[in-house]
Length: 218
Image 1 (tube, rainbow, N blue to C red):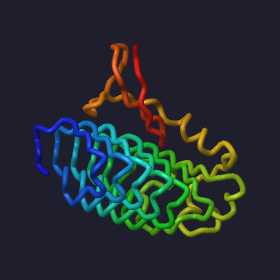
Image 2 (cartoon, one colour):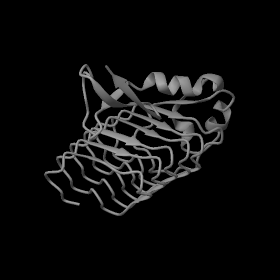
Image 3 (cartoon, rainbow, N blue to C red):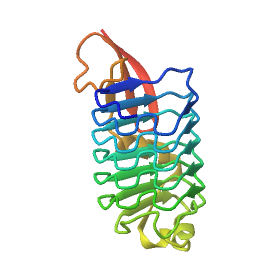
Image 4 (cartoon, one colour):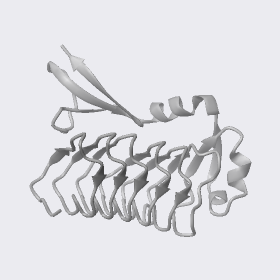
């Protein structure tokens, strides 16, 4: 933590857990790639990384810890993968520029304060057919549009707190394609640095929505 000169980091495939405060207060950190080998993100692991703009979370992650990304004021969108079952207290608290979040289909519990103080959050896509448990302060902004799988609207309309959103159904067969279409492609070099225009020859990592792939540019 407090690595104020660390701009980017690529975590190796040998890592299975990101510990508490591992990258907290790394204020120059702009990008991070979390590989599929990681299963858990610890307490305040990336808290107050105020310039963090891009996070690639591998499909192996099953839990996101207490305040893991809290006060990351430059985050604008988050994709919570389909392996995650629990998002712990205040995980994205006070991410003031967060506008869009996708919640994977295995999430069962989104704890208190997870999206509290995220007043610019206007679009939520929840792929869980059973509404996850949420609490009175999980969200601050109930004016957001909530997109849910086909046939699940009534379940969300009759579940406390979810019922407060503007609920819109998406076709179940198109749910993954819908999420991917909502996410712009992000490019990174092998050091984890964002690349705006990958025109030079080389190998790039591409993240679109919840999928990560490699591409060779010749």
